[in-house]
Image (tube, rainbow, N blue to C red):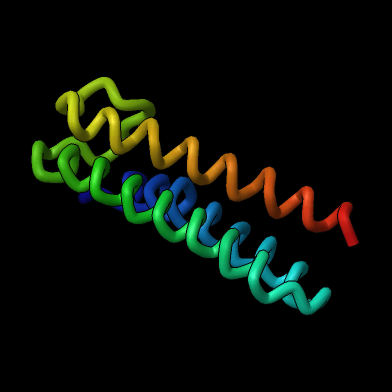
Length: 100
């Protein structure tokens, strides 16, 4: 893997994880532990599905890709479900911010 590809992977996979972690800290300050655990479950499941779908591309030698174009049907479904879970976790998290 070249250095440029490594940097792109770190940015596209690392920055969202850091953002998600910081977004989960805000409801924790409001002491909403059950809601925080629900958001954490949505985020964690989404990230696991996203990584599982991306591993299939890494095995094919595709290190940088955008979208599910090179994935099998099952991995495409995992990819789509992952983004649905991540977006719904973000929506719940933002709703909790304004519902305090």
